[in-house]
Amino acid sequence: MEMKLPDLDQYKSALVESGVEIPLKTVPFPIDGLLRGFDSNEQGSGWPWTVETDPGIYSSIPNWPKLSVVIPSYNQGIYIEEAIRSVIFQNYPNLELIIIDGGSNDCTKQVIEKYESVISYWQSEKDGGQGNAINIGFSIATGDYFGWLNSDDFYNKDAFYHLGLEILNSKKDFYYGDAISSNHDRSIETYWKANFVLDRYLRFGGLIASHAAFWKKEIHQPIWELMNCNVDGELWIRLVKGKKKKHIKFPLGTIRQQPHAKSHSETSIDKWKEDDIHINALHGVPPHPKAFVSYEYRLVQKIFKFF
Image (cartoon, rainbow, N blue to C red; front, side):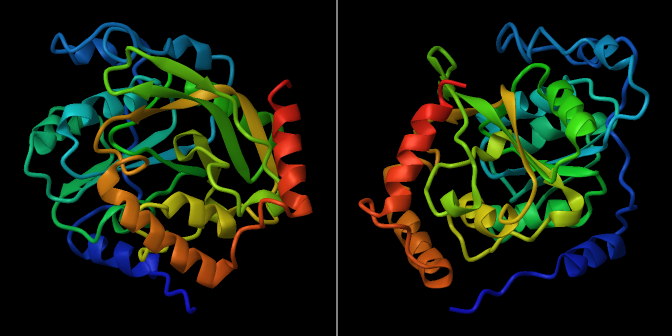
């Protein structure tokens, strides 16, 4: 099977022709934080509604690596405000936030407009789906490291501080952290310890949490837009192989297990199967459960959970 990846330079050129100025503006970094400029609308307490990362924790280091975060979105107005706040209230000193919404017909656009003064770029118009939206966003990103956040998920408090420190200390190509799994209203949360990532394990599902992963701009590859649901699983096979990896022992992000999420929605079952067919045709079928590498994988992950 032939893979046809989009030319991100073409996406970028189209945006520049429409008036987008590159490099994008960065998210403001006031010394007293951004929280006081945005009320919580009584939607909740704690992070990221009434609590923010203390900007002072960044003061001892002058040159933090630039992070670019893309949020793809479509009709997630009930959740996207928390996602946006979880990015900007990191109060990270060198940050781009790019939101690509597929022309939502709920309250999404109104929520984005509330925060547009601290968003590097956003658009709300019909696109080609999640993969296309992510590609559009990354085509104009100028950060040293890239990551994307689905609009129904969110980053955890101080995540960018821990990520930035690891980048400065180790300078790896790919970083992946622990994570939190939450129900729709965050009343139940479970800690998810990351798996141990080796190249020969990249065909096993659920290896890396996309909401807890960042990678160097120089290794970036486009999303395969043929994917309906498993955009990250397929990307990791191409992006991570042969690269220097680093596990961050901190829950960088939270995935929300809400009823309409692609990860477990009944309406997405056939789409996941379709993705599996395309991935298997391109990358080969996953190892058989009784293959040696499968036994090795399960044993290694059990051991890794204790460290």
